[in-house]
Figure: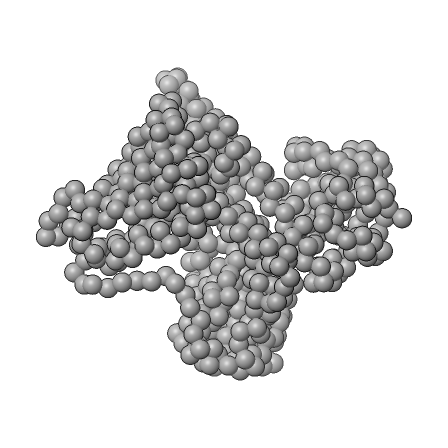
Length: 552
């Protein structure tokens, strides 16, 4: 019998009762590896969840060693989502390994939610640490290549071949960055869909207070991780010139009030006063992109709250210039926080930069929020600046000249599942195609919990979905994009071309972990009627289905 006290040092077994650990170990496989043996290769689906009982393993990408892990480390989590390993794992010494099978983990995870909490915590910390490292490495490589271009262009005797090679390297670097962003979006959002989905389902059920505390912690941490992912993707789109601002009528007081409501609880947690100073001469309705304006204000307010321990955070809006057609507004976020010196102010808007290494260790974050805010303000044609003194707080201010809206229309992003929607969806037949068992389980449990008499047929890949559509009719198809055998795009094209009406006209919504515009456009081009991004909320799924059916 394994030493339970020793095993508790492993993050997988934290906060578990002895009988739960014993139940896990009863069905586990005990395996030994000799030095130099491979546990699994890049591209393999691991045989189970590996717990290194003793010894060391090396993590390799091609021939490059990325890291070495030792006693009680966890490996092979990708098997939980039926995903292939992104690295190769090799024994660096003789190993003694405990392998927990997928079916055992799924069964016990339903019974003991702490297992889900533990596996999430392991992945969250690992992803957060590796994410920043990988991105900084990518930017470092790009900087080196750009420096190489500058050095070679200064040399008038450089040959055309040299310049061509350097240009190709830069193109390759850009492709690397784009691929990295797409892969990161998919690799993180896919398991995050299962984590957030199961968390939301459990939060709807009656749980013990201690379980509710942990579940709310999982949800908050998951949402924080998604903010980081979205920040990185937004920065990539802006730098590639692919970010476009909408032009729509919106209510400025509504946007500011939403920001206050969103940030109020964070301020209250730290005992801070959250104040609004709104100039009455500002027109209520303006023309612009309320979502991106909200993003700017949320980033700046979140930054102010993060670095303020006592006192207040104030959002002020003042009219600078008002005409019949335009209103130039000065936005400012004041705080009474730690402040910055001149050196720190000089680099505060740089990507992946914070005021100091001490700041990163104490307050966390990627340093992207201010960079994105600055570039969004500049997309608006505005300017942003900061003034600050150490120990006396900071003021982040930006100016934007908005056209005044001619129609008083407001736009709300809030999605609410009404009884009318639930009544309209009662008894619908859904074909759900997704190769990931966990994602199917989340979608099925979510829909069955909300929609009365719903009938859901599951398919494990695109070919399976096509076969099931031949055999039956459905009101809507939820189609994952990346699947084996036949992917979601090809399956959709075949449904639109090979079937006769009405089957070929069935509404198809993409379930996709990618939010890159080119990937969304590919879904539309293939014949899909819309998409639901992973990870999805209950509202995203139910309202998405309702709108998809009603658009048909």
